[in-house]
Image 1 (tube, rainbow, N blue to C red):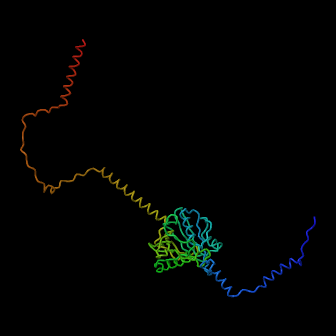
Image 2 (image 1 turned 90 degrees about the vertical axis):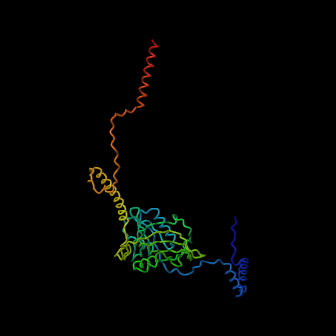
Image 3 (image 1 turned 135 degrees about the vertical axis):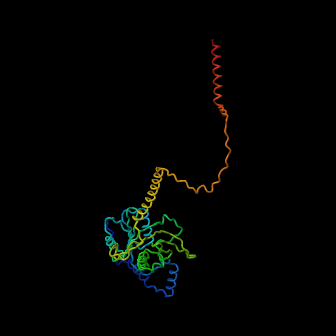
Length: 353
């Protein structure tokens, strides 16, 4: 089989291709007016990009995770917070035997400078730590009255990843420990501007209200038509326990004097129910003793008969004749029936003979 010959580069076909390219390159350049018109047409046909084209400067990252032993409601609350905060990160559950200082190392590995840590105790009490890692401060709360998004089924709705407004009660500016908590909450719950995972819209608001020495959290949708508020969820109440200077420890800056631990609260409820039971038993014992005591005869009070009207005296009648005895009809009928039965028996026996 004959080997095919290669075409040389200097052949006529190669030279013709070169000539065509040179002819294209040698064309006259387009006028600037035509270029401007084409650019305007392309601009009209182009799909607009996202609104935010700024630079992401605030590099706040929040680590949201929990200890082992949490229930389903706490897990759902944690997932709701992660969904509402696009600048958050997740991690595996931490062992309850580990010390809390380990969380600072976890934050450093995850490149996070804030942390929300849920700590479960006795499978019924939930505590929340808000911390600025690694230098502090940090605050410990008891979480009460938890209602998640799936549980509430509110009519409000918002875009996933949108940035929220933060609304604070005026009472946060009155006391220094509340002012410190306000700054900590702002840095944790506010979504950084131009964050890659966030949307450039503001359509919901987080409200923090102080009532009964507790912080009440609510999430509302902002309706565009009349700027009315419709609740979305979740909702929970934070009961402050302590504020520490360091992250997850250190000197105590503030301790809540109104705080009552869940163990003490349950103990008070048990003591109240036990006191009610003891009171009932004491009443029963007193009643038994009263029944056993001899009845006391009270002396006659001479003033008791002052207003008594004396009855009219009846004449005394002496009965000289003995009264007739009362006839017992039932006994009489029995006697008659007995006689008749005997007579019948005699007659029957006579006929038989």
